[in-house]
Image 1 (cartoon, helix red, strand yellow):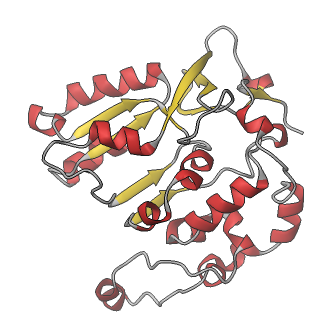
Image 2 (cartoon, rainbow, N blue to C red):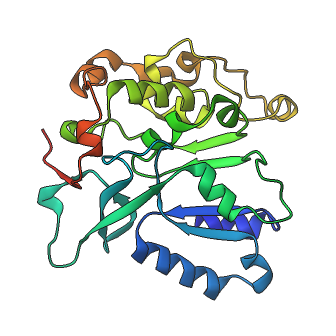
Length: 253
């Protein structure tokens, strides 16, 4: 729905939609073909795959995820086993690809390869921990606005990525206003500068003050952060074993 909304509101904008689950990808394609004109379809590119790193090994080139008909927008590799309905839910093996290879495939011929991303919507149930650390600093800094949320507090401990991977991810995305405002993980970096969500002229017209750091943007969100960090083991996961393990299930602990 987000992809179609952008297509209608901003005609001619190239939209790349990445979906790891083949059933949802198929439904998405049907929706596009039923609701978009032939011209609009030229600018929207649904890609089947998950986001991974460039240097694959046996543990991270593929990933098992669960697709649930009751929640088609929440395909992920960390699922409470007690919630799995063996009658209807599906466990899928998803091939992981780099964002660079996906963009190379989806970029129109008349758009130069390497064109900066204007808006990146990271609402992907944990894939931020694969995507963000793998991006070159120049590529990451060229992105205009990043929207979405982080998922550390929701992922069961046994399935969490390493705390080092999490820190790298959080420190990058928390420079964007949307994350600093709504994600408690950002409170780990109170003095981190945050990009303004509006241009200077727009801020002056709207009367919104210049908010420069995570602490200023997040405000009361950071109350009780250290207790939350301890409970969620934000700094305690030594490696990616559980994250890369070929299982989509975990018990909450």
